Image (tube, rainbow, N blue to C red; front, side):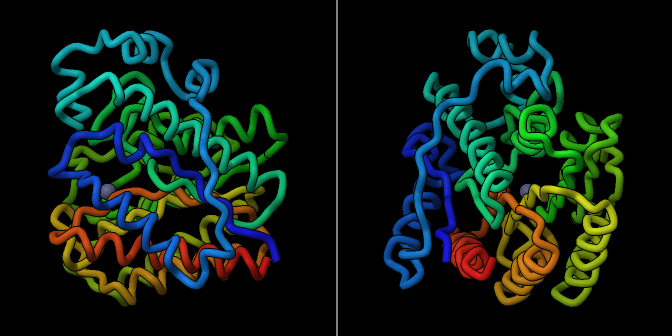
Amino acid sequence: MSSFNLWYHPLYTDGIHDEARFPKYRYQKLLQRLEQSDQFNQITIRTPEPISRNSLLLAHDAIYVDAFLEEKLDEKEMRRIGLTPWTPKMIERTLCLTGGAVEATIHAVKHGGITGNMAGGTHHAHRDFGSGYCVFNDLAISAMFAIEHLGVERVAILDLDVHQGDGTATILTTEERTRTISVHCSTNFPFRKSVSDFDLPIEPNSGDATYMEKVQEAVNLCLDFEPDLILYQAGVDGLEHDHLGKLNVTREGMRARNQYVFEEMLNHRIPTVIFMGGGYSKPIGHTIDSFFDLFIDAAKWNGRW
Ligand SMILES: [Zn+2]
């Protein structure tokens, strides 16, 4: 039985100072919970290297990439990203976080099974600007990295975060080797939606049953594409306690969602990479519970691979 490889860097915690949206507690507590669980012997924590500029250019405009790296984004561009107050550590964090996504992708393609990154899922980043706490789009970059460098022919991006994967949709809009699928709340950010290959909006307060129906529809759309790789944006901001989501999904409903995805990908032997995505419950403990469930179940299903 192989171990579930999960990428994490101390900068995921220390490189961010937006305590309102990303309390440090969220990452520290989650890692602690995993370390203390009985399943931790099935999990290997790996430390990412910062991503290269060339890899960023697989999905981003050079002018935007360099402006970020050289700290030359203007006020308006930084405000659109959020994550305030802005500090130089943010650059290092962003590069490590995106590096973690690509390393998890490489591992999944080479060895099969499920891998994950304990941050990211930065689906609101567009080709030449960042938005909604997202600087670079780790999903689009990882998809293009797999296609350009790993011999992968088709990548499906399954985005189940409560917010639409608008940046991923626009970056990959003309890319036929990828399929973007987004299940999200119809009235949530981003208010001007992009067009994914498949959008499955849900009305606010829909609850577990409706959510699960859409998840099943989305998974079928992934499978119809016959992908060699699935990038799974597994945000838990559809939870009933979430401050930014509006979907009213229970912890059990969220867990059933993940288990359904893992079971289908296991049955079809499609390597799957988990991108953590959003979670803003008040109190944050509910978000941590659901991310804990996500990674523990990933370890279990990976063990059955
Ligand atoms: Zn979200």
